[in-house]
Image 1 (cartoon, helix red, strand yellow):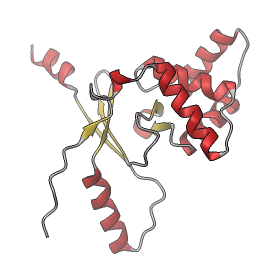
Image 2: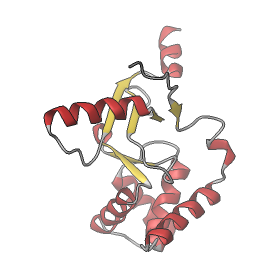
Image 3: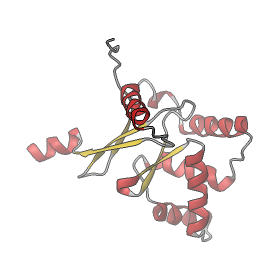
Length: 168
């Protein structure tokens, strides 16, 4: 049986990312939390807003500094890590393990595997959705009798802009 060709959908594609303002993205996150009966606290919301505003993978300590500056009062690492854990559990944020950094999920309203392409030079990341990858991982897990609880794939290389600069 042949599989249909499925074109990967970048999480930053112009048909999607530009269509929604940061305010709409936060409203979607709040709506998702309400629908699940969990609470989007002010700190959790602020961290999600900071991640969207950053536009790049952001470390927890960068978030701590940003929240402290914005609120004019210190916030401790455990508080921020708890907020990040909540956001990840709700599918609103993903952790890029190789960078020890966090990015907002572009499509938190749908369940999908995380597939990240990460530039080793500028550290930019692009999230893709490609159901073929998830399907292959699920098949391999089934053969092994393995029950996956989270699937994240990170591909490191050089983005088009950095490759262009390097070639010049």
